[in-house]
Structure formats: structure tokens, C-alpha cells
Amino acid sequence: MDHAQTTVIDALIAMEPTVWLNPSLRPAHTVLRSLPYNRSDLDDAAQRLERLSPVLSRLFADTADGIVESRLTRAHGYRKGGTLLLKHDNDLPIAGSVKARGGVYEVLCRAEEIASEAGVRDLDSSSAREHFSRHHLVVASTGNLGLSVGITGRAFGFSVSVHMSRDARAWKKELLRSHGATVVEHEGDYSAAVRIARKSCENDPTGYFVDDETSSRLFLGYSVAVLRLLPQLEDLRVRPTQERPLRVFLPCGVGGGPGGITFGLKQLLGDAVECFFVEPTHAPCCTLGFATGRGADVSVGEYGIDGLTAADGLAVGRASPLVMPIMEQLLDGSCTVRDDSLFVAMEQLWRVEGVKAEPSACAALAAIDQVRLASPRNPCADVAWLTGGSLLPDEEFRGMLAQAASFS
Image (tube, rainbow, N blue to C red; front, side, top):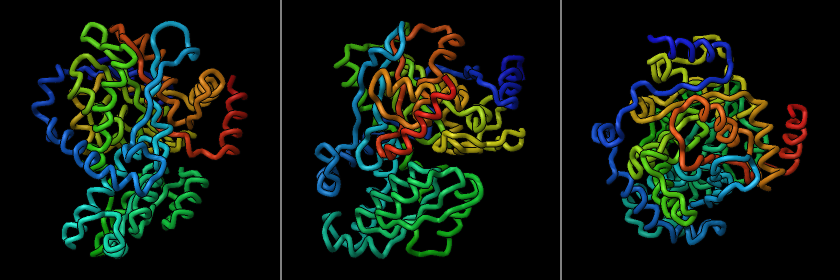
């Protein structure tokens, strides 16, 4: 292990901010040929979402013609120097977070399977609901994936159980219950909740486990975002090149969401895009997996890292075994940020841009300057992928803004 990797690991153990630049990075076109998923998988997922958009439109009034998509805007006052773009998945319909992309897609896939077996054509018909009501969706979550699967599953008529780790926010649990989902609370961390949730499905013939650690459906659902991002970039006259790439910052928990988006970005933009995962200093499971070379086989607890963070959506101790091998030579880098920087970024985003995002989402903003210092390339624009926040209750948000004031 070289000195640079050792330095990163030392910083991770000390729970200090650091940047890991991928020493195994290879040209995108070379890596993409060897992956288990390809462009046709991405296109198939997009076509399914397009085909079923009328169903989503009827079930969810907040979607635009049944399309789960968000704006891309130019930030005007957040910082000086360079172009900063905001990807507003904090405002995504249905679940108010990036998890709507993967969660909605996986529920649609499961609904189509059951409807096909039953000979039912319309997924939102009373006949379909009757069939779905005999089936049970199970998911483990720190919050936002649970909301996505829970809200979508209940809208179709499924029975839904959401196993929530100790990091999950009370308001997210209450919102799930209001939609008729069963919330199973755990004292342990996210990985423990996943194990218990997975096991609960083993002897349940009606059970279907939405596995945040290994689901290809979640992964591909996230990747579809990129097909809609490119026209948005063109509308803003942002044209990435290999010499001046687009640099995208993706808040990261277990890795499925940022991994799927990175896969999609590299499929469409190749080496004209740089992708960086961003994690809390106290829960850097992916950065630790990359830096040690152990991928999903290492837990932050093995290195004495406590996993405790205010970024509840990113509070994960072990990375996805599906995503880590895919990212091994494809991801440009990963970095960690302190919790206080999340709150400072959240307050500034609200005050200057009028954008409401939760602390986890603001990890993307908190990482930009430290990566700019560490990476030699000059981007045409930075994209902060704001991963959640619109469903955050006003009282909760006011409390977070007050907390941010103590860090200023």
C-alpha cells in the first residue's frame, strides 16, 4: 500500500476530512465493457419507467405526467468562482429524495411480475390491488429508501414493512405509519437492520425483500437519472469535455444511489465526467473500502470508527457488495466531510438560494472545495446532487438551522 493510501486511511481512522483519488481509475469505455450491466440495461429501465408513467400519474398527483424527475439549476450566490449546478432530487415527487428513483422502479418491477403471473393488465386496477394486497414488501433503511418503498408500495396496495436502524428520524417513521406501512425499529445500525429484514423474508412465501446492498433494480433505477440530466445540461449551455469535465458530487451511504448515477454518467459522458462519493467522517464505509482495497468486506467498526452522524441517510458502516466492484476502476474518487460542515452548507443554501435540503444532501456542497484542492483537473462545472429534503417538517428544519448557527 502506497503512502497516499496510508495517509487517507489514517485520516479516516482519525475521523478527519480527507480525499481519496482512485489510483486504479481507467478510461471509462474500457471499464464499462467488463461490467455486469451495460447501456441496454439502463435503456430498458428507462423504457419501463416511461411505459408505466401513466400509472404513476394516476397514483401520484405530484408527478409531472408520471415522470419522477427533478430540476437542474445554476446556483447564483452560493459561492464565488466557477459554475455550481444544483440537482434538485431534494424535490423529487413521491418520496422527496433520490431514493424515489430506485425505490419506485423496484416496486414497479415487482408489481409487474405479480400482475403478469395473475393475468392482470392494469397495475392500478382494483383487481391488481387485490393481488398486491396478498404480497409483502420488506426493506431496511435509515430513512429515505424506506419512505420511497413504503409510500410507493402502499399506493399500489402492498403490505409493507420497513426495518429502520437507530439512525432513522422519528418524523420519517411517523410519515411511513401515516401511509399504512409497518415500521420495525432496531437499536442496532443499518447493517444489522438489513440482516434482520432479509431474514424475515426467508420463510415468507409472500415476502419480497428490497435489498439496498445488492439490488440491481435499485441500481438501474438510479442510473436512469442521467438520461434526463443531459438535456438539462444543454439547456444551461454546460458542455463537458475530457479537458474540462463535469464534476459531480454524490452523497453516499451504502453506495447504491451514487453508484447507479455514476454508472449512468460514465455510460453517457465517459471521461468527460468526474464522479465523487461524499460521506460523513464518522461513517465512511465506501471511502474506507476503496482505500484499504477491501471493498464491502470491511466495516468502519473494525477501525474504531463509531458510525454516529447527523447525516442519517449516510449512516452506514459497510458498503454495498454490488456497487464496490463496479466502482473499483470507474469512480474518480471519494471524500469525507464533518457533520458541522453539512449544517453550515445547509444554512447557506437556504439563506442564499432559498433551497431546502437535509444535512445528508448538503454533503455534496461541503465536499467541493476540498476536492478542488486535491484534484488536478479543471471542471467546466460542479454538480451538487441534493439527495433529499422536501419532506422535512418545517419544525425539524428550523431546529437544524438553529443548530447550524452554532457552527458558524
